[in-house]
Image (cartoon, rainbow, N blue to C red; front, side, top):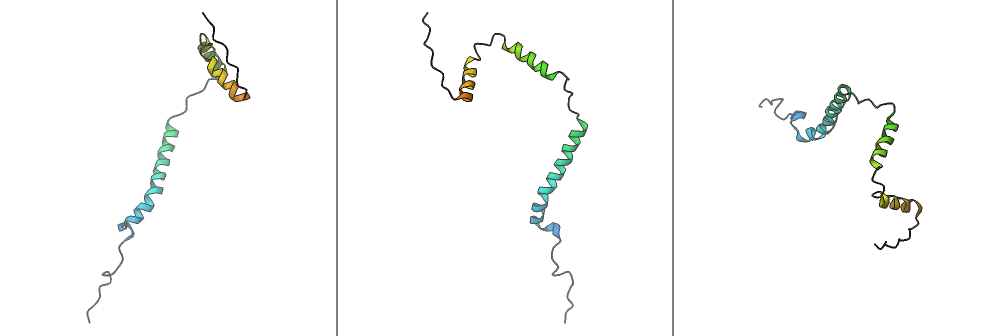
Length: 96
């Protein structure tokens, strides 16, 4: 009778199976990415928004609207058509 070796037929350790790494790598990548996101959120503060942001936006729009009244006409007409569902009547072309 020959003595059997106890580790001769032992299964391989878990880290030697490729499928285990395939299953573990997805959640591991998500955990690492969440720590990177947390680091970026803590170290880079958001810029402050001024108290009168609404008034500044109105002023910017007023500055841009000067001289653009005619160029916005087709957009306004399309927006109004989409909101009401009424097709505007075509205007006759002006003869010079």
